[in-house]
Each structure stands twice: as structure tokens, then as C-alpha cells.
Image (cartoon, rainbow, N blue to C red; front, side, top):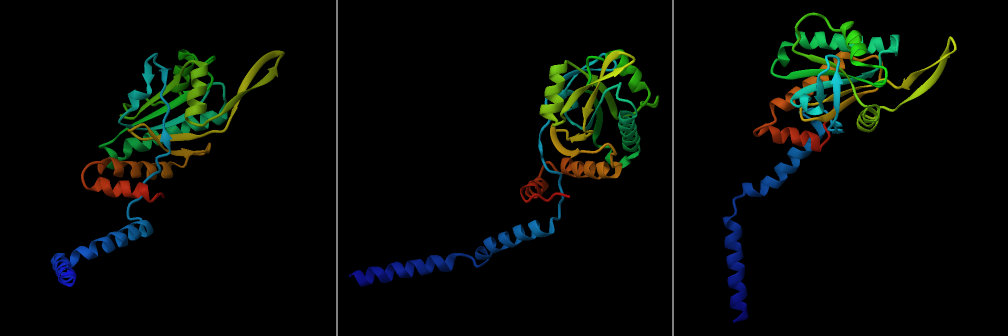
Length: 246
């Protein structure tokens, strides 16, 4: 009797096995091959998602109160300066000006919105008037769709945003000139690229911004934005999973 039951079970198992389509066995193999190919050849490049950009509430050169939420939906490049900095920071502002002109001319990015933000590290001296006069030196009179805000706020909050959020640490250095005590700020220049979701995607630790590199990185973000829905989104998430970074 046991022999008959075993034979019956074996026959049923053989029938069930025979009913499984052959192509189904190829599916896991195909999946593994596809994953390996994606990881090796990296058909899609993405910028890393470094961290969330810090929240803030500052006032710009026009006296307008702005928060980090005002830049949601915009690819934003942040820079850091102060109006008493001198030539070094003026060069930083000039590079932001050059990037703004380049974005104005880039017709392939018309479906995206952009913003530039320059955060003052010296809000005690950089009043609204000082920021307005400083900004006027670098902002042309032409109507640009790329906004550029020079902002300042509470000193402690500025340190939290610049230092804690964007990783830019700075300190005061006391100097003496004509028997009058004064100070300057010591900091390493950097630019930070944030996408429309409020995520830091690139940090450029330099005082000589590579405009072509920034435009390339913006192009990566543009591709991800355009494919943020539908089946293509899976491919882009896969690119992040396998760190397909440029």
C-alpha cells in the first residue's frame, strides 16, 4: 500500500513539474544577467542623493522673506559670501553671474526652473542695503527667469544652516587697521547644488567653479526629473541602487 501511495505522489509531482512552462525557469537567470549588465555598463547616470538640504528663513536684498520652501521645484545652486570679503568673493559672484547667463541661453532646459542663492556669512554687517548694493554689481538689468537672491538672517541660524546643513564651517579672524578693531571671515569656498525635491546632489569645494561640470550635473538632474514617473522611474531608482555616478 505504501509503495502505491509513493508512486502516486511521484506521478503527481511529475505532472505538476511538467505543467510549469520552460521559460519560467529562465526568468531568474535573465533577471540576474540584467542586474549585472546594469551594474557593469551603467546605461543611466545619476547624481548621488547626498542628504536633505537644510531648512531656512532669510531675508533677501529686496527685503523679501524667503524660506527653503520657496525653492521647491527649482534646481538651486547655493554659494556663500559676505560683502566685506573682497576680491576672492567677488570672483565667486562673477561665476554665479556666468552660470546664470548660461542657464538663460540653454533652451534644452526650458522645462525646468532654476534659482541661485548667495548666503551671507556675515549677517551682522550685511544689512539689506549692503546686500542690495552688492547684488546690483552682479545682476544685469535683463529680465531673467533664473532668480538670484542674496540673503542674510540671524547669525546663529546662519551658522546652523551654513555649517550644520551645508557643511561650510567658518570663523572670525580679528584684524587691526588704523587702530580700529575689525574682523574678517575665514572659510573654504564651496557651491552646493540642490534639486527640486530639496536634496543635495553635488558639492563643489572650490573657488573656481567649473561651469561645464555644473551644466553636466544639471543635465543629470533634468533627466531624472523627466523620468520621475512611469516605468522609466524604476531604471533611475536602479541607477541609484547601483550607484551609477558620473
